[in-house]
Length: 282
Ligand code: NDP
Image (cartoon, rainbow, N blue to C red; front, side, top):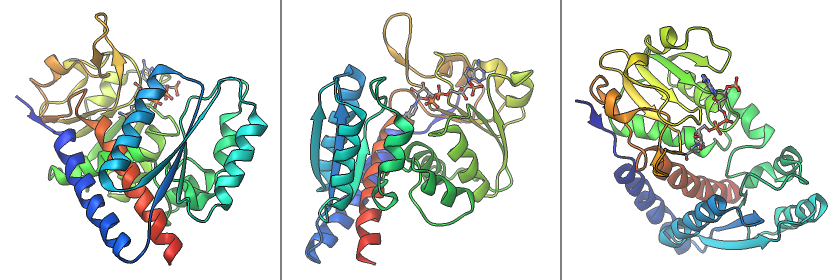
């Protein structure tokens, strides 16, 4: 039976560390604030934004909420971002995705000042990551690295397989694992014989968005399995991309959904906000 990798516990540790860093910065007269922009009222986005505000309150970061109507134009949103870029007191800018269809997400991401890009989605942040320079790293993959490190799971020299190649999870995940000296393979919807590839993995990271698709058949005995997926099953219950019940029999360690990768994403966002304030001071 696999050991459970407890994202709730590990994310709490990180938030407590961040809280201490925030308190120390406050003693030096440095306050941190994060602007959180939501356009429209997508219910899932409202939950995510609410959780981010709660985390900010917990660690002592001020959150500035911008709740814009669904009809907001692209130019109105870009103008708000430009204003926030200029504001000294704002350290981080987060635009909750997805955006309504009249707004080009790419343009929005590119408008955020890279120094305030706490989500790590700006091309400059992505470029820095790919050539091993300092910069903000996308919070979900950064959180996965912390989950592995803090669970004493060695990445160096290991065969790591990632299923999914999105800009926010799969691709930055591959770059971070390379940085940790893993041997990395990235799979996607065109991969022929997916099972043959995933069965090679010492560490398998699944980020596809398909409820419980990856079952025990995809897993090598003793593998570590990280489930990024957040889906609803046939009963409307939150579940991952991995079939937890069957995979836990074969894996040596596994993340649950909920309580695995999800809470880590927010903890790493808080950490990025502190980094942003530190970088500004330097
Ligand atoms: P995307 O939809 O952007 O990407 C999905 C990826 O999976 C694509 O690369 C796609 O391949 C690949 N894929 C889809 N179907 C298959 C298949 N049958 N076999 C192999 N590969 C496949 O998703 P995201 O990366 O944004 O998110 C993935 C999941 O993670 C979602 O459930 C999302 O909700 C969750 N998530 C969770 C977060 C958290 O904090 N826990 C944060 C971000 C995401 P191709 O490129 O060829 O289309």
